Image (cartoon, rainbow, N blue to C red):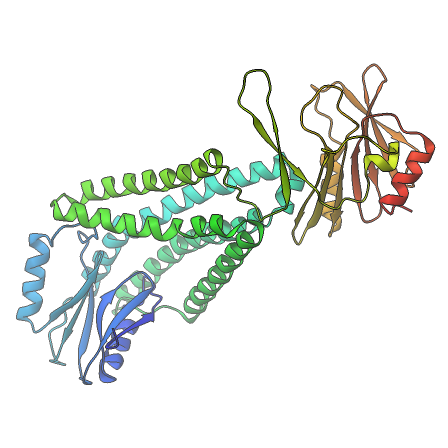
Length: 461
């Protein structure tokens, strides 16, 4: 592969003239185009040569065609007779080269060229962009629903935030591409009516935008995978990492398989797209199967010991008993407890918006279980996030027989107790401080000395 070079190449719908000139300069340096892919073009090294290049479009061209159509073959023959050799093709685009610098251009009528370009775009480019807008729009709407369901869970999850940062630009980029296409049509039509050539050069803004977008998505992808690597174990990370290349290779192999069977372009596209969806969901179910059936722990290794309990005639069930460091224990409130199987757990989620710490001291299901405690500490990093937390945590569903009452306790700016409709306490409290919000769930009523212990242990003074 030493005689091959792959280069990044971002093309736009009005970039042909500039690309032709670029290919001619590359040939003069001894690099000759050999293969065109979405973002990378492959060049072959050889002796420098002066060549002329031409980029043309054929509306019936497609990666799903098992062979060129008769019209395409006639088109290639016409080019050969005119001194043009086919270099490569990609979908509807064909690239020719000629050693004759005075070779007859493929398309001399600018209006015909313009109509052909529009026909190609309407068959491939526009439907792709519209489908992208619909799919990513649905994904964004779904994510918005998740945000509305729980502001805290959504804003504390880096995976959610990274996903939005990926989905939204792609959604907006597709809208931009469609708008830019119609603007190009308008400018090209006006240029032709004035006797000029069809516009075939992308603006500087388009180029900078394209490169910025590619860098942005690259950095974001790296951050997403880094976050997965931090939160989950290495094996789960590898499984997630393999998803994209698996789909890419599988999709490509399916297309080639259908081509060998000489399937029509429509049948090839339909089968390949269905296969892509089946492969994607099949792989996700495979990962889920590993997690469920083989106790495949996807989280980073936290130390625990196992406790196996048998209920009735069922098989023994495993309960994981953790020993995380948590600041407030049942023993602090109730004194020594003769019980050795407490699980002490700490889960932390942190993003640029909020840090959420969830503490629990609990037992496995049993009769006459000892006291348990759970408390969540929310540390919003922005005022609007604080307000959203308060809104979510003070919301009472109309179907729940619970009311919220303000109490004077815990040294809080505002403290709430949750009560059942019969005025009995739920033993759940919500405490609002300047920089933190604490949700506390206990097993019994509190006395003053226990309140003081909570204030001291959680540093609420």
